[in-house]
Image (cartoon, rainbow, N blue to C red; front, side, top):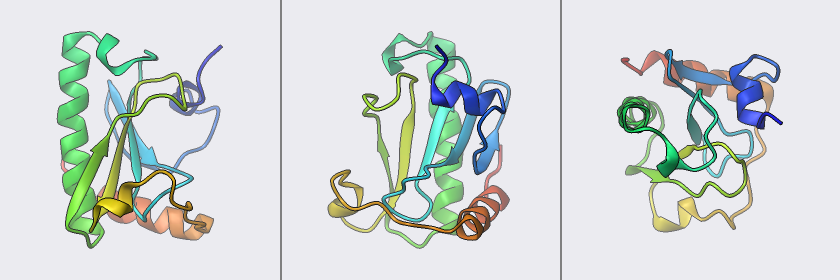
Amino acid sequence: MPSIFSKIVQGEIPAYKVAEDDICLAFLDIFPLRKGHTLVIPKKEVDYLFDLDDATYIHLMEFAKKVAIGIKKTIPCNRISMQVIGLEVPHAHIHLIPINTMADCNFSNPKLQLSKEEFEQIAQSIRQNIIL
């Protein structure tokens, strides 16, 4: 059964996309810890990050770096946290979270409630600051 992320890649489920190429996709987390919280995935469905082939893994990391730079240009923050947890969806993914303190990337924190318009505005702003 395809993961929810594979369904996003196939266009079966909508997402607030911020970047895409032939191998990877980046989109806003719909349950964000902070504004700009973005997920970066390989389009190929592989459950565990370290099971990706080397070329895809390297490309994913390079792609995530470009997205993180775009987020940092868009969302005022000290850093972009990169976390790989991989338990909630069986599809390799990276969380990029704008942070000012360590507490900002604690997944036990309440998630933000953003409107569709806020998500769209954030995604558009990030897209404008990403150079692929």
